[in-house]
Amino acid sequence: MVGTFRFGACLSVVVFTLCGPVAIAQQRDDVSATPLMVALGACCDTVAATCTPDVAEGDCQGMNQNWFEGVTCAAADCGSPLGACCFKDTDQIEKCMNMPESLCAVTGLTFVPRQWQGGATCGTNNQSCPLISCLGREGSCFEPHFTRACNDASCCSDVCRLPFQDFCCEFEWDYGCVQIANGVCDLGACCEMRSGTCVDYISSTNCSGETDAYFLREQCSEVACTPAVGACCDRTAGGGAICVDDAFLDDCIAPHLQFTADETCASAGCTEFTGSCCDFRDGTCADGIELGNCGAPAQRWLQSTTCDIASCSPESAACCDRLHGTCTSATFAACSCNDCEWLVGQRCEDVVCEAGFLPIPTTSQWGLAVLTLLLLCAAKIAFARPTEATT
Image (cartoon, rainbow, N blue to C red; front, side, top):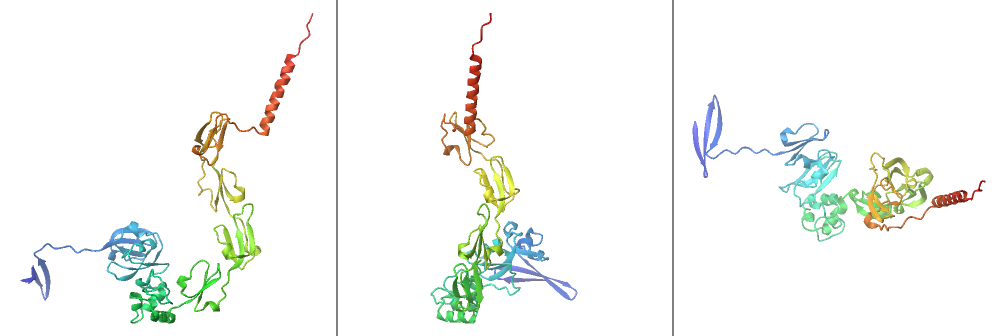
C-alpha cells in the first residue's frame, strides 16, 4: 500500500508493507537522504593511559574509559590525572565532566570562566560545581558592591541558588545578598602563619596556601594567630648546614631553607644538601657532594641531582695564546700550548689576548731558571780552566 502526503513544499511517499498483523512504515523523500551524523571524539583509558581517536560515545563505555566529544587524542592528554571540570558548553549549559586540567582549560565556551577540581569526580563524595557566574569575580561576599556575584565561588553559589536570589549573581551584590551570605556560607578565620595576620569570614577554598591555617566557623578573636616560630635550617651554607633556633617562618622562606615549626635545631635534624659536582674541564662528575666541596672555577654544583641526570661534558672557553696574541674557543684539554691560558667561563670576544704578555713565572719556575743558570755557569768555569802544557 502506497500513500502520498505533502508536507509543505516537500513531497513524501510513505510505503506500508503489511507483514501479517504488523504494518511497517517507511518514508521516502524525493530529496536525497542525509546520513545520520554521529558525534565522535577521543576515548581515553585512564589506567592504561591510551587513547583511541574518532570513537562514538556508545563505543567508549568500558571500565576506566572516558569519552571526550569532538576532541583529538593529543588534546585529551590521557596520561594526566583527571578531575571534575565545571564549565559552560557551547549551548550555554553548565556541566561537569571528568577530564585532565589541560583539557578543562579549553573546553566549552572559551570566554567563560571554568573551574578544575583536581582529585574530585563529578557527582561523587559531595563534589559540586559552583555557578559559572560566580567564577573569576571581585568584591567580598560580606560587603555590598555594585558588581554582580562575589569573590568566593562557593559562598556565592550558596547564595544565588536560593529561591529568588539570582539577582545577586545577575545584577549586583547588595546589602540583602550580604545578609544571606552571613547566614548560609560555611566560613571561618584564616591565619597566615608567616606574618601572623588573620582574616574573618573566609571559606576554606580561599585559605589553602602553604602557610595558611583555617579555623571553620571561628573568628580571629577566638583563635591564636601568631607568627610561627621554629628551627630554620640553611642546607646550602657550604662547609656544613647552619641552623637557627627560635626563627620566624617569615625569615625562613627560600628554596634552600627548611623551616620546622615548634622544633629546635637539635630535634629538627639539619643536614646540608648534597648534589652532583660537575668539572667542565674534563667532564668528570661526582655524586653526593656538598656545595662547599664543589667551588672551583670550572666546577658546577647541582642540588639534589645525580650524575646520571646532570649533563657533564667538557666545555669550551677562551684559550689565549699569550705569545702570539690570538684567542680560540677550546676545551681545557685542547688549550695545552706552553704559552696558552684557558679562561673558564669566558669567550674570546670578551677578553683581550695581548701578544708578548706572558704570565708571571711561579716560584718553582723561577727556581728552575736560576738552577739552570747556575749549572751553565759551573760548566763554563769547568771547561774554561787552562791546562798545563806538557813537555
